Every structure is written in C-alpha cells, then in structure tokens.
Image (cartoon, rainbow, N blue to C red):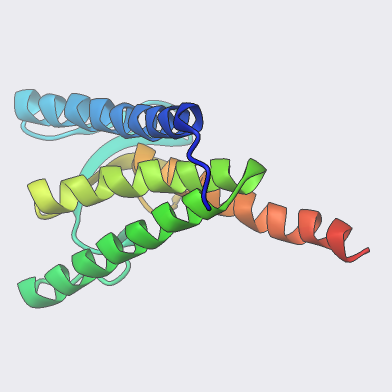
Length: 163
C-alpha cells in the first residue's frame, strides 16, 4: 500500500508552482515591454541580449512548423511527457525527484504558453562575438538544469551503486 505524505506533496507542488510563477512573471514582464516598445531588443552585456521571438517548435526552436495539425500533435506529445514526468516524480525520491520537479515546472510554463499564445516567447539571447546560441527563456533554464542534473545523477550516483 502506498503511504501518502501530504507534507511532501505540498512541498513538491509549491516548488513546481514557484518555478512556474518565476517563468510566468519573467514572460509577462518581457511581453509588457514588447507591448510598450513595439519590440524587445535590448543590449545588456557583451554576451547577453534580450530579444523577443515566438517559438512554435520545441526546445530551441527545433521542430517548428507552420502547420497547426503538427503543432497540436507536438503539444499533445508534450502534455503526455509532462504526465510521465509527474508519475516519475511520484515514484522517485531524493536528488532525482528534485531534478524532475525542475523539469516539470519549466515544462508546464512552456506548455501554458503553447496553449495560451500558440507559441512560446523566448527572449534570452546568449552570444559570444557573432556566435549566438539559441534564444531561450527562464522555463528552458529550469528544464535544461533539471536534465543536466539527471544526467549527472545517472552517471555518478548509479556508478556508486554498481561498485
């Protein structure tokens, strides 16, 4: 029988909600700037600009299509993956659970935008000289951090178990 720990559920829900809210607040701020300025294109440092684009694809604009049918299929696939991540969070403990919570919070932020705006606003433009990395947002930072930490956990934590 599964023992339900409401304190942990509440803490996990709060963590996901905070990640989602940080993402929402940052996007609302950028979108309000775009509304006032008619565009968002700010030079911040030699390595960082704020430049608003609308991403209809998945991570870093991959699989961008103008076809609504394909867009909807990708959105449904993302929703399914979010459900799988939620199940994994329920079944996982420790460090891996926190990594999955980062991924879930960011994924929910981007899925919200896909549903509400039919695209995800990306605005963080990291570059070195003329080489620009993909433009991304705060949700992408949480997702990427969670994935990198999961990879780290798989490599180093599982190695200790094997030894």
